[in-house]
Image (cartoon, rainbow, N blue to C red; front, side, top):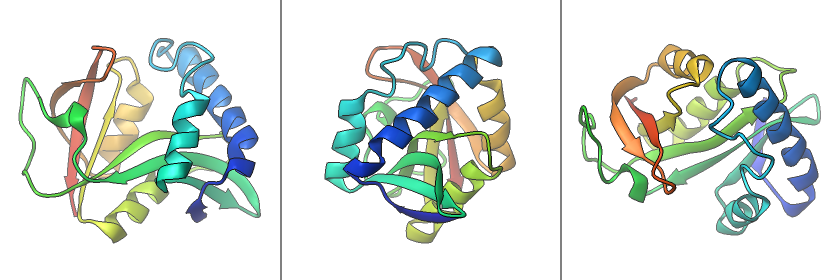
Length: 162
């Protein structure tokens, strides 16, 4: 798969991918993480593009996945409970990752991409997102504890040192 920065022209396809991901999550026991049609919000994706942290994955010339990769301190990771981060070194965070279901390895590809930029990665997911928890662990992340996102809901937090 090829990864490139996302553009405004990619937004309709990205929204299709996120709609598919919401439906998949609901069908696999995780209806709350991105439960309504607003998540992730278009404005957030537009900001990712403007900030240069939004990416899409292409396979055979077709966009099959989307995510944000942000290097730097994430304020939601400032407080962690029921555990601790593996280190306090600079890190990159994978957010809003989703695929359209047509191609396997979307998370692996994003992790490899991030690891090329910085050898310290973090990611989080909802307690009900058992599918993602399994995928994260298969990518070599270690569970570190619980963080809280902006709306106050908890997420399981993971870190991988490459």
